[in-house]
Amino acid sequence: MDLLYSLPFQGSLSMNQKRKGLSLRRLFSLVFFLAMIFLIGNAFITVDYKEGIAGWSSIIRLNLAKLKMCKTQLRPPGSETLPRGIVASTSDLEMRPLWGAKRDKKPKPSLLAMAVGIRQKESVNKIVKKFPSSEFVVMLFHYDGAVDEWKEFEWSDTAIHISVVNQTKWWFAKRFLHPDIVSAYSYIFLWDEDLGVDHFDARRYVSIIKEEKLEISQPALDPNFSEVHHQLTSRDKKSRVHRRTYKVIGRARCNENSTGPPCTGFVEMMAPVFSRAAWRCTWHMIQNDLNHGWGIDFQLGYCAQGDRTKNIGIVDSEYILHMGLPTLGGGSAENKTDSGKLDKTKTPHAADKSSSVSTGRTEVRKQTYVELETFKHRWKNAVKNDECWIDRFQT
Ligand SMILES: *[C@@H]1O[C@H](CO)[C@@H](O)[C@H](O)[C@H]1NC(C)=O
Ligand SMILES: *[C@@H]1O[C@H](CO)[C@@H](O)[C@H](O)[C@H]1NC(C)=O
Ligand SMILES: *[C@@H]1O[C@H](CO)[C@@H](O)[C@H](O)[C@H]1NC(C)=O
Ligand SMILES: *[C@@H]1O[C@H](CO)[C@@H](O)[C@H](O)[C@H]1NC(C)=O
Image 1: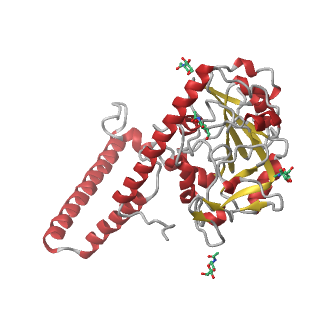
Image 2 (image 1 turned 180 degrees about the vertical axis):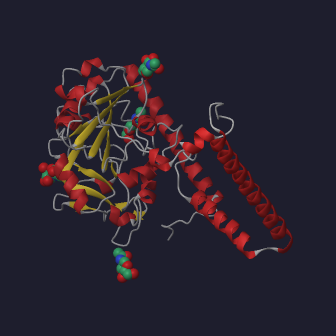
Image 3 (image 1 turned 135 degrees about the vertical axis):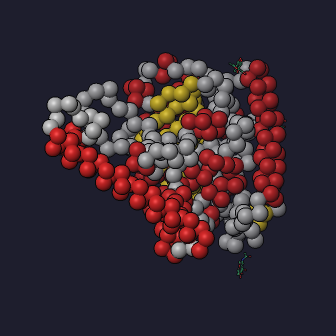
């Protein structure tokens, strides 16, 4: 206080001489001190420049090292100008109260995301009910614009609804399941809507894949009532989990030595379940402009966080039916002709086949094959052009 008030440019006329003298002396010594620092500093720099004084350059080096250390510190891109402690680089899908104390609820550990249309609401309702609300965030991607129509289900209020017309599950996933947004969830179920879940329990499923350390998985498909596109995903009644098939598939003779698809190391795209890390990788592989996600399934091994023959598996004890309905969101776009099998599943709307829908389906199917070729082509090019990339599965 004393020093501040006695500084000459602030000093008042009422101040006595003695105090003025004192403050002037102080000011003088301050100026002198600063000048000395300036001179010495200058001298050091010139000397250092000419002759190199070890002490000074070591200080510079130390600062450079600090600078370098700070530079190599990982900071989320864009946050470099912020102090680290304030950066919130991830988010989640928890709802928060507008006021009042945060309710002391445990965050939900997993996420169920589905692309849905109102015409499949019964099937979707059954699926959602299999996922206990205390453990799963439910996120619905509406591809038909119908949102209010879901309000009749009591779980609808706490679900996250995203509505964009005529988009596929992969389109939604790329945009609304960014790994930084969903990093709070241990497992992400990215499912189609046309699945029968009578023999499926989500809690048991999670405990099994945890125990088996499956980074990418799917429930097995009941072959009697499902479209099974790949032998690998067909249910084996005698096991809890399987990771490979021993069948002959086309030219591939699958056996215990097989190292990749179609014998082992992939899941189909109608009901995949990803660990947090596997999803972070898979999200990057989903192409922004390829809406149907075709081709990704066979490359999932690269996201398996290690050995794909071990970390990817099919859970037999919790299994599902794939109805193969011509739904837009599913985008599985397979040629489903076996309506006899469909009847057995007794799903509503199974017989829904207006001619405009079938032309739509034909076009969608064409598009999926085009996209598949595009994806394969991009993969090939990416491999060719990345000198630093090592193919961990090259045989
Ligand atoms: C969505 O798709 C349907 C069927 O193909 C079509 O009739 C409708 O116009 C599309 N809506 C938009 C907004 O693109
Ligand atoms: C499919 O049906 C056959 C004959 O009814 C039965 O033996 C088999 O166990 C069924 N498969 C599954 C996976 O339920
Ligand atoms: C698998 O590899 C082992 C060791 O190389 C070999 O002895 C065995 O015959 C192979 N099995 C098949 C089915 O090829
Ligand atoms: C569906 O598959 C059947 C039998 O494989 C074939 O005859 C039919 O032409 C296919 N339909 C379409 C629309 O591709």
